[in-house]
Image 1 (cartoon, one colour):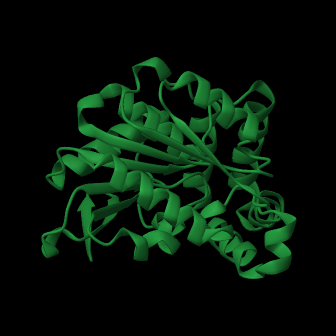
Image 2: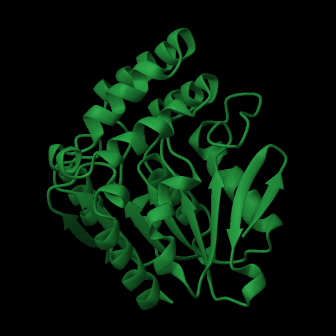
Length: 262
């Protein structure tokens, strides 16, 4: 595995030097990083896997200005071109699913498939307001309070009881974010427009958590109706962090979809 740097953006690149197959690009969500997909990596043998930390998250520094979510999508596209990736399977979580949708509509010929975990649409007005308020909180008070609230509210009760490590992972992921970068992402998401769903041509798998309060099942069902030919899988008893809450099921669904679309 190697790290690639494009300006301030850091991207893990695994598999290029092993003569492996098609590229899989994994785009994390708000408060996440490349580590959000770590539980799936063992099931991705045979693929070249690229995991960027979006500018302002993880190990990637925040870039000047306010690029918005489409700007983040552009940064991912630039990183892939610098890595020589012509076409790729796109995998997203939460906010990353909207970035995947933008990439799939901007250059459909470059997208082999979409797999969207906790898929989202344009945030509704109440969520837009909450995201802007959270951005202010991050800048004023830092990440500790936000990390605790997100970890407690976006992991299912069953997962918290059966595997407390999931809650610890989510809290740590949020705690490690730079407040300014996290705030910028909150604002970018609050201002995000819906993607042009009829323009999505790639085979699409939507993976929803049965008890997800962040990206409710109804949202995934709406996307399922709007993206032609898409499939919807619902994982029982999990919430928003299904890759950690149900790692084996999540990885199996991803691998099956990738192999079918290849």
